[in-house]
Length: 341
Image 1 (cartoon, helix red, strand yellow):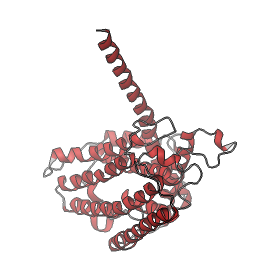
Image 2 (image 1 turned 120 degrees about the vertical axis):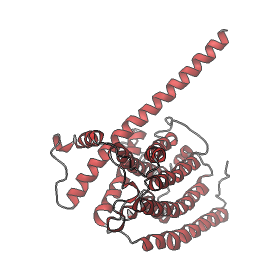
Image 3 (image 1 turned 135 degrees about the vertical axis):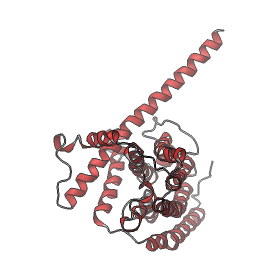
Image 4 (image 1 turned 120 degrees about the horizontal axis):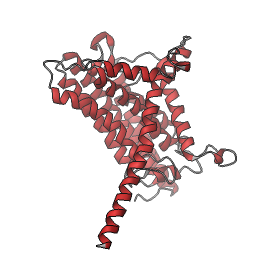
């Protein structure tokens, strides 16, 4: 009886610890997503010599809350010809997938929600599942515009996931582990952005296409698609797609930081850099990547769809495959290839 009681108490403690870890990550992440929308409008406004939102609250800091209140107060409209169950599930799926991927992102050497040995495969699987939310939204809307936008978005995401996969394999060859913590620890002496810089460029541009961001925001081509696969959505159902897109931007920036920028590792392992906590370094690197996301949107014109596909299949795919072969050959030739485990 005592053993059963001890076991149940320890299980309850583990559950509470897991819930506490999830809340520590999830609540700041949701706030980060909300204020990323404000940061985007302000930064792009300054780049284009205008002010952006600056009226609601001090420096416009209450603008995200005003936007949320506006969306909450609007009516959720279900098109009469839509498949209503799938129509409602699609934005929820997109938003949930953008959240649960954070369970394997290490914020420091001893803080991660789920420290699994196949963390990189988990991230790749979750990012691949995002296609289903897009397809479900376009099909369930019973609109030709929404369906065409969903097909374009799905084709775009699938095309660039191939290049992202080869880039990840190139990193894994240098580490010998699928664990994200091991990938970060392997960069203690040299961040992978230095030896794998071409792969870093391919990966970052591919994340722009994967998250449907400018200059690859073709699913939302206003001239031919009205507003892409979410054209029939309104109120909070639209907001879930909106929040999911920004959460995916933060996730892709975190993946870039982990794979190429040393994750929680400091810029230099000397004072005062090594006095800054690891999570702060990770947040700074994520913020830098997000700034480049916004910078690209403010300064580059939109690609044509044929240019997008040509870049993915005829440039990035063969180049990333070639670099993967060269990386493997170099590691074997120099005898520095790690053993995968």
